[in-house]
Length: 391
Image 1: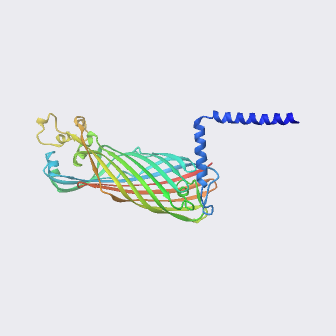
Image 2: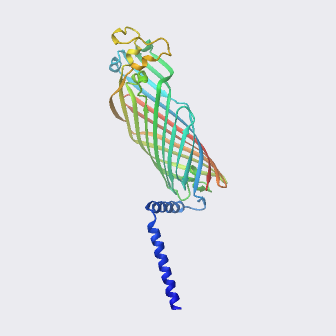
Image 3: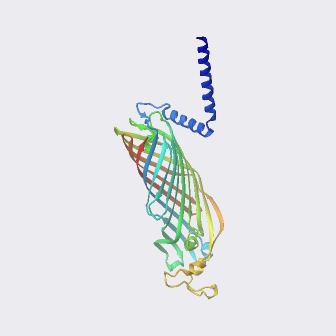
């Protein structure tokens, strides 16, 4: 009997040693992923009031998304007498451009584990727009990174003042640029909710939590926004000259804010969310890229014999003259705007049934920058609808 007990103890010790060796042999990547999974699972339920919130049993979610994006970018430039004189034009001008590309519709998907996930969508239109998104939500926090790019050739302009341009004092027009304008934007925002015990941001925006009773929360947030607008193509030489020789610019903004969010549950499985957060922009930087072009000589219909070229053909389909246009970067300038107020507002509606759910959400952002008589105003919003399933 004693021998059997000793044998049993030896077997247990050997089994334990083998298990420890097996664990030690696990690749460090798997151990790290397991630690992250454990943290996410525990943080999802930590400190929540189960009368208001519940964690879905199935942790994974996949969504098929359709997005609609819109952007309105206005740029107002004052061109002094000296600036116009450089282009052999007399007078003073205020030139305002408004870029309103057609509303972009895209389709894509999202996959996540308890609120930590990523998504990608691709434009169905000629703008070749793309959206990439990474997000994470916990019991009382959330952050999101969205990267967007698209191109357009549609702008409108309005200029006023006194000059020799077309022999008029004021004009409005809608035009298509000769070459596309490239736009790239990055938005990163992070939130902390003071009532994470009863309110869930995740329930409204990635459905990794269920809100079963209505609740709201004060919130604090930070946001980083940057966008690059590039129309520095030789064929856009005239537009660049009208904009004070600026062919490209980059905007960087950092903001902080305090707001309020509310999850309303009017009936079982239905959730409506509204978030409003006024923000103070504490860092406001614009970098301008200046260009020099020989576009002037192609617009001069008078004596061109000393310019080494033939006049622009009268046939609008003959574009051979564009091959002689040159454009080069001549310098840069950085301008800092004063602190300003902006607005971050978003809303969503979600309906859940069994493992599936339907959701629609939207976000609105507005920014502005004023410096040295020049002004930039940017309005950016998007709406998306999604069908999701948990597994």
